Image (cartoon, rainbow, N blue to C red):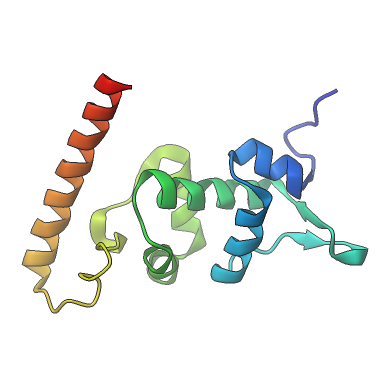
Length: 136
């Protein structure tokens, strides 16, 4: 029998639901202070429904949107958890918190150049997705 939507999930259940290995969830805990599953005796993790929503958004930002870990951390600092969760419900995020690729993250860019660069990056990623859809 499947668990209800409000039931707590073990790390293996959470990993299966999110489509990531368990070690990735543990790693994310070390990188994102806002990921805090409940821990029982012996250190066993249990994920509440809101924890799963946060993890789903982190996975989407990292794996689908192309954010770096530093980019997600910055996004959380700038927007907070509420805005991150709103984005996970399909309300989207602006490119403001979007991380640039490694090597450009610390480049001295004017806001206009940064915005143009992010627009170009998004256009290239959209073209890549279309090509992958056609080929795959």
